[in-house]
Length: 438
Image (cartoon, rainbow, N blue to C red):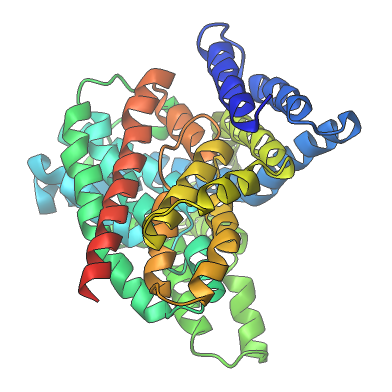
C-alpha cells in the first residue's frame, strides 16, 4: 500500500476511534501508530521501540514544561494574580478590544518563549480575561495563540527558524526583520479577524484554570502579578540577548546555556512564584504544595494525549515517509520558494511536528539554496510558513488546544486547524511579495 494512503487511513482510523468509539486518545494513538508502522513496512521487532521512543521524546521535551507551567498557572489563578492581570488588560484596552490586546500579549510572550511554555502560561490569563470581559472564549484565545504560533514558526530564536538560518547560511537579523514584516498581517488575520467567527463554539476549559472572583483588597499588586506570570519570558529573552554578547566557550557562555534551558527557566520561575504569590501572601508551604498537586491532576491526562501523538510522529519519521514526500515534490517546475512551502507543508500534514517538517525540508532543499538564485532569508521563512499549515490529529499542539479548552474534535479542526492554515498561507503570500521587493 502506498505510504500516503497508509497515512490517510491511519488518520481516518484515529479520528474514528476518538470521535465515534470514544477510545481515549492516548490508547488510540498507540494502537494506530503500531498498525501504521507495520503497514509502512517497519520490522515487527522495531515497532514497540519506535512507539516508546516517540512517547519518550515528547515526555522528555514537554513533561517539565507542561507540569511546572500548570503549577505556575494554577498558583497565578488561585492567588488572584490572573484576575489582577485580566482587570488591568480590560481597563487598558476596553472589553471590545480584548482580542487585539491578547494578540499583542501573545506576540510579546511568543517571541522569547517556546510554544509549549507560552501556551501553558497564557491559558489561565486568557480564562481570567474572558471572565472579566464577558467575551466568548475562543474570540479572546485565538488571537493570543495565533501570535505565538507565528513567532514559533517564523521568528528566531525559536528552534526551527534558528536552525534553518544556520543551514542556509542566512542572516539572523534580516530573517528576523522579514519575519516580523510577515508576522503582523498573519497574526491579525488569523487572530482577531478570524477569531470573531468563532463566538458560537462551546468551550469548557479545565476547572482548575478558573477561580471565583476575589475582592480588590485580596488581590496581589499589578507589578507582582505581571512580573511573576511573565518571568519565564523575561528570563528567556535576557538569556537570548546575553548569548549574543558573551564570548563563545567562556564560563559566562556556559552559565547562559544553563539558564536559557526552558526546563531550568520554568523551575526557577515556579520557585519565585512560590514566594511572591504564596509564602509572601501568608500561605503556608504545604498549602502551596497542595495547589501544585491539584495542577498535576489537571494536566495528567493532557500530557498522556500529547505524548501519544509523539508515537505516531516517530513511526512516520522512522519509516522515511517525510523524505519520500520531499523527493516526490522536489522535481516540480515551480518557484523555489513556493516549492519549499509545498515540500514542508506536505511533510507537516503527514508527520505533524512543525519542527520536524521544517528541518526535514531544509535537508531536501539545501542544494537548491546552495546553487544560488534564491534569497536564503526568504527560504527560511517559506519553510517556516509551510511548517504551520493544517495542524491536525498528529500534532501535539492540536491536542493541547483541544484538551485545555475542552472543545470537540470537530470544533478544534474548525478553529485551531483553520487558524494555523491562515497563518501559513499569509506567511507564504508575504514571502512571495517580499521576493518581488527585495
